[in-house]
Length: 330
Image (cartoon, rainbow, N blue to C red; front, side, top):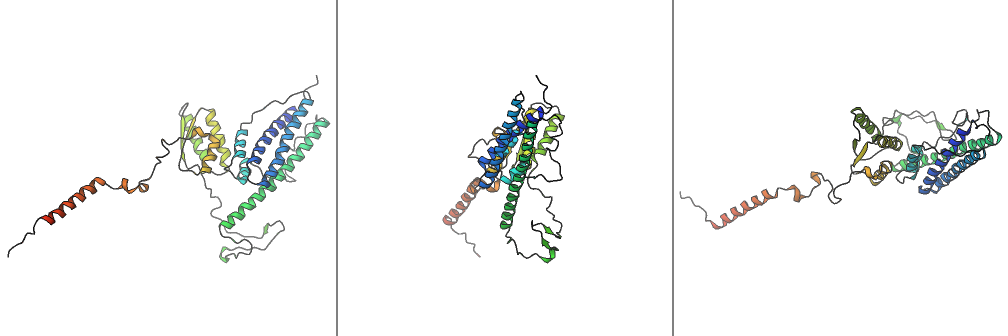
């Protein structure tokens, strides 16, 4: 039997990773509301699935079989791809896609051909794979750019902007010279944006990490963490929260969530990450918690005191009616 190829591990890793990618991209294509996005995602999903099979076939030709490897983050990627609460733009950001390879920069494929033992068949397969992966990156980037442009147009429209030709207040100190063909402005001086680093949403993952660390420091086993939140998170928080949830499950730490009136979309997003069993349910769906000012007049008035007061008024009226007026002689 010939010696085991030194590049067998690389072929195995590619086959497993590409098969997983084909699965979650296919799931994404099945739920996206955009036909244009679906066309791009489905094309790349087919590529990834074919890559998984092609490298499994090559491993078989070399006399070996693919060794399955469980990627702990694959379930998170599948949850993101299958989500109907996340937009396509948010999925690109959460999955880290949309960055196109550039000439003059390195990527993960640069060292694939450093192995001098590559046979011609395997080398040809790797060459096709690398070229198609980089082309997929360009397709991802182009699709993401369109989604970003659409989001900016929608935001501008909702804010009442007119787009091109809108007058710029002179006090802003803007100096716009001209634009290149690719729409990048040259010589633009903008004031400092005070909201540049502002981020809406809650870093739930950081709070859970602190609570987890506290339980570990105190030597608590089989403990639980109670999270009280409106479940508002940013798209890039999805992966971090998934990591923390996996760590809690691995250490046997329970997570209980008390939702503070989240929207259905927020609730669904968190439920896909932590599971439905993590949410504490109300004792009765017909008896929600209400603030004092939200209660009815029937609950707010001291009715006993009101009834007693009305009785006294009635007695005084009867007294005035029945008894004669007292006259004082001078």
